Image (cartoon, rainbow, N blue to C red; front, side, top):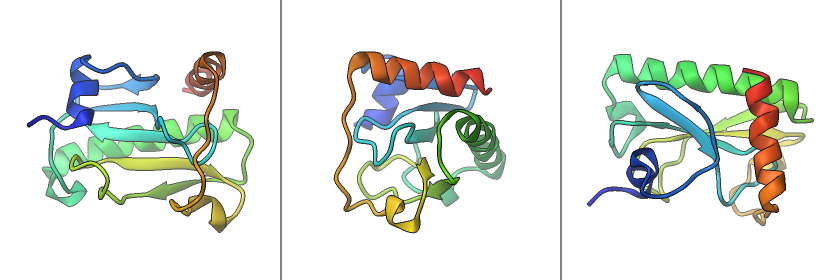
Length: 130
């Protein structure tokens, strides 16, 4: 059965897409820890990040690098935190989260919500930095 991320990649489920390459897609997390919380997802459905073929892994991390730099330019924060958990969705993915302290990377924290306009503005802000 296809993961929710595979359904997003195929267009079955909408997302707030930030960037896309032949091998990966970047979109805003629908349950963000902070404004701008972005997921980088390989298009190949693999459960664990380190099970990806090496060339795909480097392409995923290359997109993470580019999106992370764009986020630092557009989202006020001290740095971009990076997390790989993969427990909630069995499809490899990388979290990029604007942080001001280590506490901001705690996945037990309350999740934020935004209006449609705020989601779209966040996408535009990050894309402007790409």
